Amino acid sequence: MYDIAIIGAGPAGSTLARLVAVRYRVLLIDKRQLTGNESTPWSQKCCGGLLAPDAQKILSQFGLGLPKHVLVDPQIFVVRAIDQTHNLERYYQRFYINLDRYRFDCWLLSMVPATVDVRPGMRFIGFDAIDGGYGIQLQKKGKIFKERAKVVVGADGAASRVRRMVAGDKPSPNKYIAVQEWIESNDAVPYFSTFFDQSITDFYGWTIPKGDMILVGVALPPKKDVVKKFKQLKQGLNRQGLLLGKTIAREGAVINRPLSIKQIYTGTGGVALLGEAAGWISPSSAEGFSYAFKSARYLADALNHSLAGFNNRYARSTRNMRFNIVLKNLKSPFMYNNLLRKIILRSGFKSVQLLK
Ligand SMILES: Cc1cc2nc3c(=O)[nH]c(=O)nc-3n(C[C@H](O)[C@H](O)[C@H](O)COP(=O)(O)OP(=O)(O)OC[C@H]3O[C@@H](n4cnc5c(N)ncnc54)[C@H](O)[C@@H]3O)c2cc1C
Image (cartoon, rainbow, N blue to C red; front, side, top):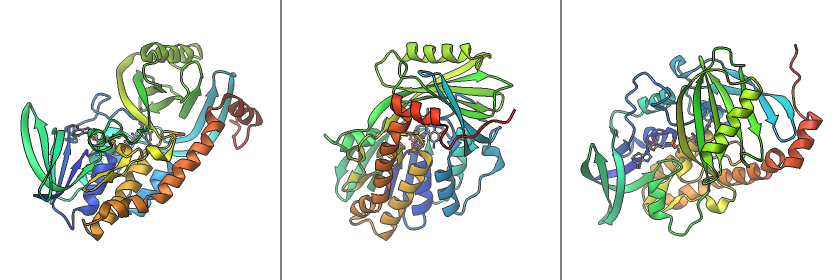
């Protein structure tokens, strides 16, 4: 029997596996292949791939530095905020590391010690409580496999199956559908551009330059004419002369937006939830890497202490993360309330002037 089975080898799952491997017998599974082959828009998790300062800080606390092959041109110092409702535009200085998301995930996985049993291309189906732990059902190429573990960790992202199995009537974070296109563009400006348009979404849209392409995306409330709204966003960008190339790929993903800390759920008994599966993600910017790393660190500390009572220790240690979610929700109206955003953008507060 494994001590810990981790479902999902994204940033949260791989980091946890790395941090608990010395003490425990660990199984790490992911439905993706994550073989480290050349990345394409099709092999990525649908993501903006920007490593924000909060996430950089935690990598520094882990004592890690990024290898060159996970970086993509250009590195980004400017955020352009465009309010399409009021026709306003401002620039802000920010420090993002621009990543190839697939290579970033492979790099995080490459640091998992060889003692961990890593199974790529394997899908988690379900689990049952058994004597001393859980019986886990997995599927690979149509075949069913069974494993046993004392502890199960759901690090399986925004649409977590593990969470659905244990959360009962606990409230889920608000769900959005993120749609992204990879568009050819050799002369995209080196900005992370954000778009606010109430007629499209109450969250936001973005463009991010990635090498010789530009990533165009938007987070939309579900069941709200997703295809039509995405088209509307692109038409607006075309009118501004921002999108000229051919679309190479389109992708989509669920994205969580925890509007209340009641929507965060860290698990119960021998089942823990980690990263976005628990609801850890910024409700104002959709930045999720720092939360994935932090929650992995807190859960690793709780597990490394002992398996007995680990879930209570994990929940207690994430108090500062809950407080952070409250703060982000307090900040949100300044970005998403039409009137407040208009006042802030008009004032030019904390913006920078582009020198021509
Ligand atoms: C469009 C978009 C843009 C984003 N941009 C950014 C950004 O620029 N910067 C940022 O910080 N955050 C961004 N985020 C958020 C960020 O991607 C997530 O918060 C972060 O990846 C969460 O990490 P995680 O390990 O918890 O989950 P994930 O990265 O989602 O990893 C979950 C893993 O579980 C696996 N999995 C899922 N189900 C199963 C199953 N049944 N069986 C086996 N394996 C399974 C998946 O294959 C995946 O590898 C973005 C999100 C979206 C949707």
